[in-house]
Image (cartoon, rainbow, N blue to C red; front, side):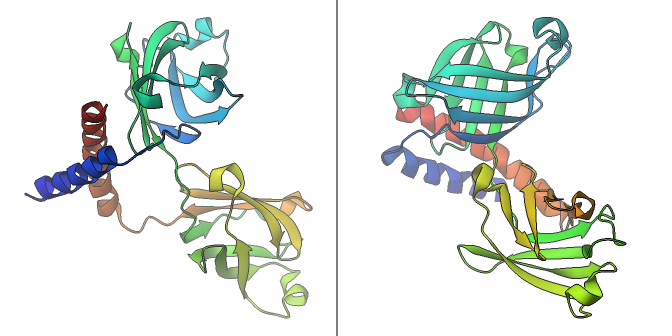
Length: 269
């Protein structure tokens, strides 16, 4: 019964999308699923980036993996392929040659998913979900920052949303310079701007008096901190897994979303 209710909610949502004027938005970062058979196919893998190359073409940049890649791409593990801007289905679909075979790419009505159907080798098909940044959460900090030379974030750090334009970073600090730099304080509260670079997955900013670049992975699980002035003061944080059961439920619901999205996309156009 719970699944039926969830399904009904998304069906109603997609009917609304169909009845509304929608514009396809292909540009962005996408996480690729593992449905493409790497034993027999050279597959898009992990993440895909789509940018606008010019007024007629997109540029698809991605990792690839699979047994045939070695011969097909001369050992390359990444690709950069121009793709005509889609015109079919009001701009939501394109059928084209891609990596040597005929493929159909279909964008969902809400521009969140891409279904990739390999028309010659169905086992080489797959799908991708748009990567949306989520910085908010608690992260366990690794020990790569050199505490002999740096005032480092330590143990855990929490990122909360202060406003639409700012986040608040709170956490413990440790390291020999901290006593002088922070007047003996062992905790910090630092406001940073809401990340805008790399579609919201990166920010370069002043943090604890030095220039730092923070990059969130596309699965929202890790934050890499590169200190651009003192590399030995760099580090990384890993998101604390607060509720595995919730993640499982969300995963199941997403399957329903994808199915309903494409059903209604086909009905609408």
